[in-house]
Image (cartoon, rainbow, N blue to C red; front, side, top):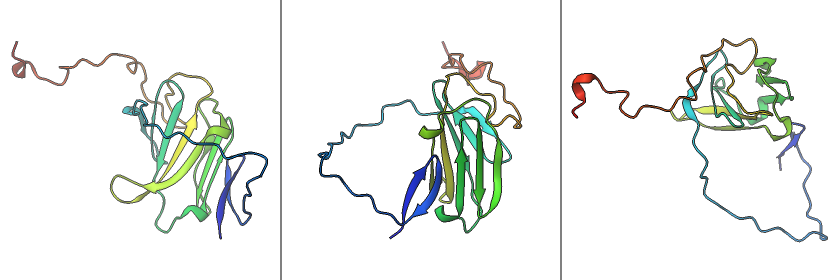
Length: 165
């Protein structure tokens, strides 16, 4: 049986089984609804490696489209506090110094179904300090973050002839 273990954010297959210790009783897990605000797709951008979005507080979510034939066994994601490297089937897709520091032990990735039915690799980075990032890696093209904190105008998308007082 093949299990996956997280060893300092480098995911590798392992055949070891975890055993529960008799000294610690099992903890009850509370299941609660996710009431967090969804990430705004306009507060991110596209890059040569994929798409990303963020919130101001602590998250940056990266979405990469894997090549045909990729599966969790041939994906390598390595995250340190200041860099990231993503490899699909031995080929490097993303490698660079991050724009800001992250909590490497809290970062995670998952191989999931995308909106269009295809597979995607979703990587969640947890920022050490809040604030808007204008890019994920320092070599990426920056985006304009100057209006991210503006409150949206509810009638902003309407033309003058559509607005009836």
